[in-house]
Length: 205
Image (tube, rainbow, N blue to C red; front, side, top):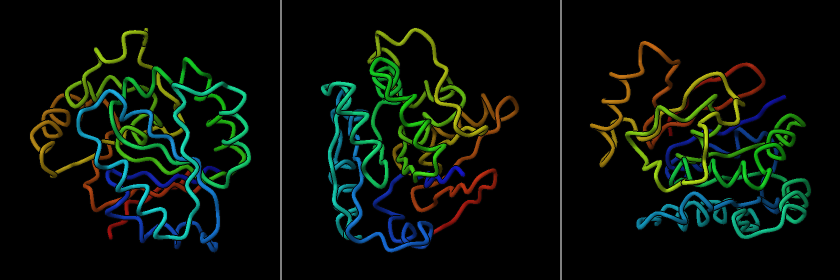
């Protein structure tokens, strides 16, 4: 059964995670993938997310997939308890997920029931494709990304940072452009989409 914790800003909603996990999370190990943040000038959310996980008592195993061999990527994703993918540039993240084969490994782990925690870009890549976030992220930062199909773990399109600075107008523009075409699910920084199997709900801190 798919178990997903889909956020805009994990640091704002992390206290909802233990209840979602339905088990003691203290002492568990999470594979922490910060790769989306690499081409970005602003990346404070990476440290914030890591700190939030540590506050929950989790052990954080950092894994930059852009600089790691596939064998080690597979080993960490398979052996650790949870998977966490940070925000940053959605297109660069998707490029590296595909280039390294991490997209398939993550999909396999999700299908075994392992909990996936997404934040912003890490949430968007779960959608069928990521063309809809072109207004939000610079796709030119992923020159090797030939097409925009994503992981298709969910059948909706998470739209992060709804109503939050500095993305408020950008999100409104995306809704105006794609709202009638795609199943957009906008969430603010204080909201999270929780997925259990085929059911999903939006929760607020």
